[in-house]
Image (cartoon, rainbow, N blue to C red):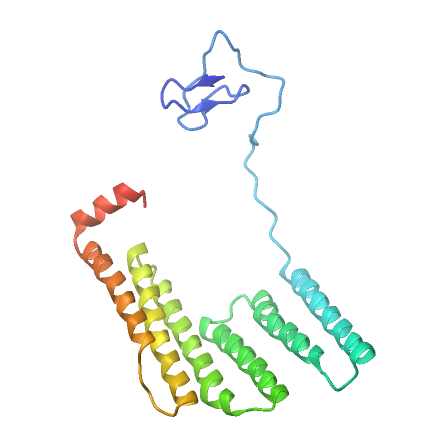
Length: 234
């Protein structure tokens, strides 16, 4: 076993130079092994890109076959009185909308991607509401919460497109989570009791602000920020 005299990294028996700093290896007790294959490739090569169309076809085939199988199984074993296969088929359609359009349309804008995902989720929740025989919770809770979730995701995408620092991105995520919880309790209270009495969302939002405050102090003080980067290696 050899070690680099410059940086101290452990060397493989086939290494003629240190892979970290490039220092030549000299160990009279253990000459360089020229016959064994090296532990890592010596020639730099690129990984072949994935064919998105073939992947989209494979995903479509898997989801479609699973849906057809569940529908046939539902008709044979249970009958038409319990349409549990509709939930599976709707979930397969939801996964298809979340995956295949993004694979095929690479230049699709972010807002269009989020619109497709949000619409697919809203339609799946509508299917559940129709199967369970109640549309009240869908219009007052499911649809507004889905819209709020899409809005929060769009806001984060806009922030990340500006390539913020790690601290700024972390603060943006925490703030969006806190605001989303406030909106969530608002619609839950109006759906259940018809009035808004904030409680747990305020506690969660306060915890989010408590997390953001020290991060903001670190973000605004360069000396403290450099010390944190040095301590935590980022």
